[in-house]
Picture 1 (cartoon, rainbow, N blue to C red):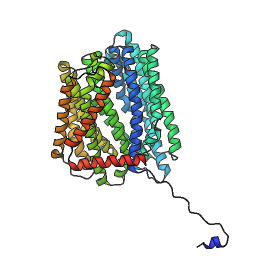
Picture 2: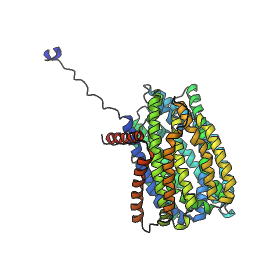
Picture 3: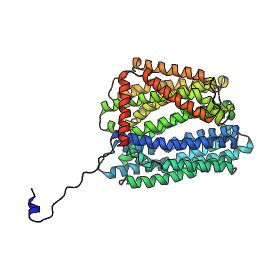
Picture 4: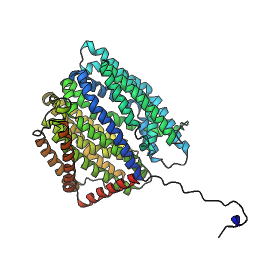
Length: 525
């Protein structure tokens, strides 16, 4: 039957085709994780190729100095007030806002806060540049070189703070997967510039200068991406209330960042000052595999945070608690399987990669892996706390942890060296291990208690896995890269299967399998 309009020979209105469905939360999280892993894989490949070049080009002592000034200048990253991190969290909770000006005012607020903190950043940077030769204990002939390299690193942080605004908007809108491939290419460019600086004989200053160039290019690429995928992106003059709101959140994030730097970066500084930069090189290279694992965890879990922030922002606390439990279960599985694999094959990896003299020994290797697993679990809950827009909740706990880390490490390092530093980190972070789950449960409207019975089984499986792998790792030696790669792949698969079967109760196993099937289905679809 035709309509009256058609009967009269008029034009019939054809309904517009339905708009394509927006990607689901699981699909966006899966795509974000895939993008992050792709980019991190490129960074990992570049690091594996470039690091031996840098170690050989600088020498073990100067490489330790490079690591020390990198950590030292990293302390000032919080001096800008962390407005871009606050911007990302704010955008994540307001993804569905109809008023595009709301997002633009948020960007304007971030710029205002960044400008307010600029004098502080410059002052802290100048102080750290002046201190850098003293902290690294370099001879007079290298003091100018170390200071110039430090100046370049300060400049890279200044540029990076401004350049990260478009990235924060893209990630806050849960569109981080749109940058797929961009950062991989930028990592390759950074690797070429780093190796070129070494081959050209530019030393520490050349390495730092390469970072400035890469960060500037990265900012430009993200600006182009966000202009294309987020039509509402722009800057609007914020109201005083908008600035105050973002400033308050930024201040707590910045304080937390300072404390995190004290807790995470002080190990290298303490070792270099108390022992020597050469020991720093051994410690850093032995922990390289653990840092790779943490990087993979950081990007993968970080990919879920915009979606989780949206769930919390809508007040769906029961669902948020379920998602948090899935994140913690997957983090435990990852940490157990990867940690056991590192303990079994790290000695062989270092011998093939940079030479056996850079392996720190069984106890340091074991303690680094335990700290890595602990850090992954602590960070997962820290991300959830940030997603609730209440970063101040973790600042007090992190302060106590940092004090514990510094106190124990300073007390034990003179006599125990690298083992003392590891024990300090492990002891201090235990405070966060206990307190963060209690804070998360409170924010998600759940009873604030530790599920000790549920924790006992996974913890026992993890510790038994680590102990056995550490023992065998001192007795297994791969003489060729192919042998090592096959051993790593087989070990990881076996460790993952054992951890899954022995460490998780039936309901947790069903949850992991269900989440895996959902991720595969949404990625394909």
